[in-house]
Structures are given as structure tokens and as C-alpha cells.
Length: 284
Image (cartoon, rainbow, N blue to C red; front, side, top):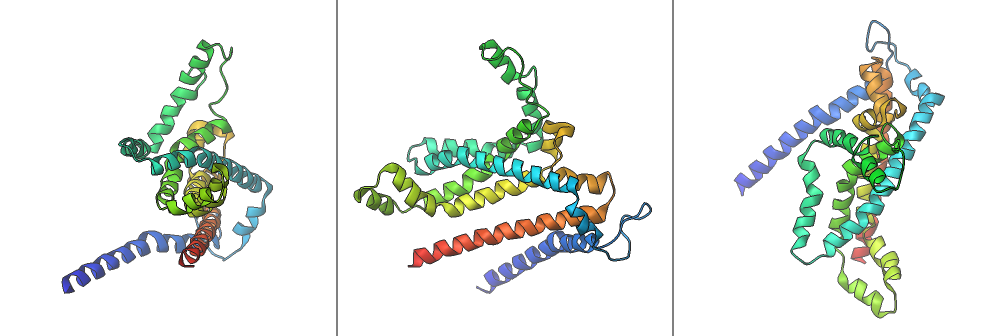
């Protein structure tokens, strides 16, 4: 017992030290830098100022925020529409194919998302696989201009982030109490009513968790808009990257990063609130 307690204490100590050095400390430094000034000679310098946060109201930045929210939100919605049926089918499946389908969901994690994004270019470019198939089938006469557009960015986001939507929903579907579904059907509810009033509310924590796991990376991933969107798609992740690496304006980049972290914390609090309400209902 003493050995187990010692191992647990050591593990927790190492975990807390790791989180402090590589999570909390960098965030505190970014918050502090967001209140400092920038000059041509120094990345950050005194005096303390609120100018960086005031610049967030700039029309150009607001348009980038709006565009990022729209593309990330639409990508999250598409992942939900595509991922929920797939997650439900896998979770309710009892045959030997369940493990194979689950493996197909996990396989993309074995390859770098950067490489998979480059592979999409061969599919959606003007003379790529998709346009060649559509022209051969006679469905179109000219190649579709998909690459270097917002459509390409959304395709890349959905392709890379879909597993993050499937796995949380699948976990919640597996925990469904079949007695509630049977009771609803015994009371005369059809399949759609059962799905809308029983299954969806009970799997809402998984939907919220999956939406958070998809929405936040979709807002911040910078290489997918760079590769698939080109110069036409500048999202929040690209904006932060440019402020740190190109413009060398670390205080402004830190202000954007701090704002994004606050958004993350807000979404996590919403998720915790929803799961707490669900646990109360289970106790009742």
C-alpha cells in the first residue's frame, strides 16, 4: 500500500511539474506579453498598455474572426452530420465488423495530418483525381475550382477532424440504457421521436465534447488554410502565426492567443455544466 501511494504521489508530482512548465507558465508569459508594447528593436518592452486588446476591434481582424467562426462552425456541423450516424452504427453494432470500423476511424491518427493534407491536393486539384472522375463520368465539362478556396479548407478540416467527433459520441452511445429506448417504443414512440427525445438528449455530452474537439482546432490550425486555401484563406490560426513569425509582433499575437484561450475555457465550462446536469438526472 505504501509503495502504491509513493508511486501515485511521484506520478502526480511529475504531472503537475510538467503542466506547470509547459502549460501554465507559457500561458502566463503570453498573458503578460499581451499587455506589453512592441517596437522595431525589441519583441516586447515596457510600458504596460491595453493597445493590443484595443486592436482586436480593428475591422480587418474582426472579419478574420468572423470568417474563422463561420468556417470552423460549418466544419463542426459537417463533422456532426457525418460523424453521428457513423458513431451510432459502430456503438450499436454487435458483429465482428465493429472492431474493423473502429480501426478505420483510428487509422488516420497513424499518419501526420500535414501529410494527409498534402495528399488532398492530389485529389481536389484542377487535374486531380476528383475532377478527372467527374469529367470522365460526364458530370462536368470543366474542372471544379476547389483547391485554394474556402471549400478546400473545409474539406481539409472535416477530413482531419472527423475522428474527434466520432469517438466521444460513440462512447456516449455505448452507455445508452436500452431499457429507456424499449420503454419509449412500448409507449408508442416511433423511431424518429425516440431518437429526438431519448437518444439525442442522452448523447448530448458526447455531441458537445466532439464539437469542442473539432471547433477549437478548426479555429487555430494554420497549416490547412496555408496548404489548401492559399493566400485567400487567412483564419485565426494563420493570423496568430503571422504575428509571431512574420510581423514579429509578439504582444499582439499574445493578445490573440489569450483571447483564444478564454474561448477554450468558456467552451470547457459549458461542457462541464452540461455533463453535471446529466449526472444529476442520472441520480434522480
